[in-house]
Length: 365
Ligand SMILES: Nc1nc2c(ncn2[C@@H]2O[C@H](COP(=O)(O)OP(=O)(O)OP(=O)(O)O)[C@@H](O)[C@H]2O)c(=O)[nH]1
Image 1: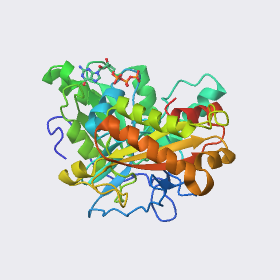
Image 2 (image 1 turned 180 degrees about the horizontal axis):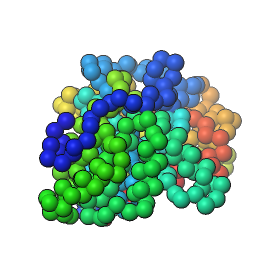
Image 3 (image 1 turned 135 degrees about the vertical axis):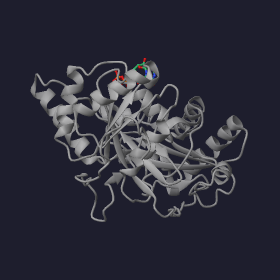
């Protein structure tokens, strides 16, 4: 990989690469939390919606990566730069069975799922030790780890603590020397050597997320450590955040009409994805999966209630209420976006989501 022929000096061997936790079929255990194929699933027209299996290009890779590094190391900026406009997840963050998914990088040949982890800390309490155990578990389960070290700062105790932890992993670790734009070439070379001596990295890639330099190279390196696998998430697009919020509000309003008393605060609405089939076709991507949507914008929305009994209220007899909600909300959304929309509503239960911090985070609260 020609990311930094002058300086990298590290091996790109994949030996010792950890085998991530997979299910019986060898795929990462994955639970798209906002998918429900139960009785609450209906298209806006009340019809059951079939999911078409997308064609997977040969050689496609998909898997998980985790970005670590001490505070201020440039993790968020780097994540955002990699994801760029390719981010597919806004409010309705899906979840693997174990980890919070922060973002998904969609490429024609791969899908890189970036998962969140709390940072390592010097453990002072039992909680601190348990948190560190949690981080270790996450790092052992992903396919590749990205360790961010800023180019403009010396290696500090925080970096050494993380490096020691990473040394015990079988997962390949790619060291990203971040903020490369802040130093001269000479200083960058010195910093790369220092980082090289800090541990046994699979590769070292200098990168400037701010200038977008070498971000594609880093991405390429990370993808090379992912296993052959079909995509883990449908490719999709995001509308602008405020539009997504307005779509959710329109659906929520329609869903609460007439049943406000019964469902005062127990209804959360999440826009899972918005797919423009025309644009997807132009960009040679999977043009969505909703049969019957034609050229319409596909908007997939989850209505989340706290108890199964509330599901019935939202769906109504034979899905009649949900159909009304769909028709009404769709009209509003079409007005808002100025185009025809295929609205796909799902109703699901997230027990006591109001008092579960994780559920709240997933629902964007
Ligand atoms: N010049 C320059 N600055 C950068 C670059 N990447 C990040 N920064 C800056 O470095 C600071 C920290 O970046 P973050 O991405 O927030 O770092 P982080 O590791 O996510 O920080 P925590 O959330 O504290 O863990 C911010 O002020 C960024 O603007 C870069 O490539 N070049």
